[in-house]
Length: 300
Image (cartoon, rainbow, N blue to C red; front, top):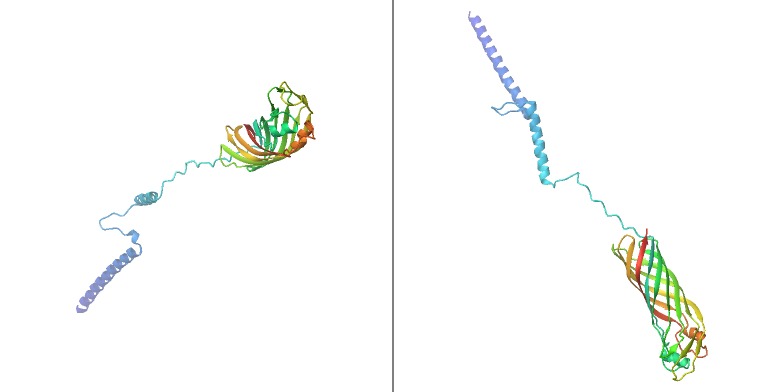
């Protein structure tokens, strides 16, 4: 009996020990599992989240992250159109100019007194003119925005002298030139284009035949005959101006000013017209100023 009781007691003790050990092992295993996977822990009194609630939480976190990024940077509008760069201005290939021309001639020693003395006339029979009105035309070809070539043609037709009291039969004169050379244009502004050029070519100056007469009894023998004469000489013009754009096709040239040199020998010219044994002491060239203004037509 004593052995049986002892056996039963030992059996109960063993069962109790096994149960205690099992309880401790189960608790330890549960704690170890929670330590390895903290995301699966839940606070006491809270239900575990369902898959649907987890998706909503993830979306909420993503939305909050995007909002914080948006607040930290300027709003972007991907559909906003990007402004296009302005198209470069098209340079006209060909430009044609036409307009008015005014020449102030530098005649040197040619004046009323010297001419009257040479021709043995009484004072102020022939008064040389210095100011002449005429026309000017140009054709310009542009190789680039900066450099081009121009051909210039101009002309005047008038009497080179004013007659004194009672003098008639004054011969008429004309002057025509054709020159060509390079032109440099500054095409920075849209409306205004300044330019400079250097022109080289020839000038033809002529004087018609005539017979000077006078009804004045003072001092000289009339009539005085003049022969027709024409000289062709080298000429050069250097200067510039500016064009003001009115439209795509039309520009206004309010000013073109040039130093205009003509190599005509006035001694030989007037000596041939009147008497080469009398005319002396005049300039062998003319240093003139030339002014032009008109309209420019542009061709692309």
